Image (cartoon, rainbow, N blue to C red):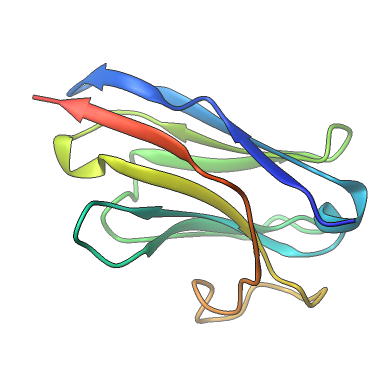
Length: 126
């Protein structure tokens, strides 16, 4: 059963922090590339970060490197996104996603995701 449930969004001032959580079913979590995406009003959805749940590699968009950290807890089938030093341009709906195919995240890690959560809103005010 495919299940991805995001939580942790909210409103913060610039410079603040938030931690997003993505609770997945065992089926959805095991040995897959999982990632976080975001979409701002009027803009295309973009990849933020990804990791392979069976390994240690992580991937980040240039715009969030050094500020965001993706991590996982295999015991809880949960992927996290720690967001620090938030900027107004980080505002958007954040989605958790998983690759339908059990495989490593590729070089184009932001592609190939077919399972999506419902999203959680992040708003950063200046």
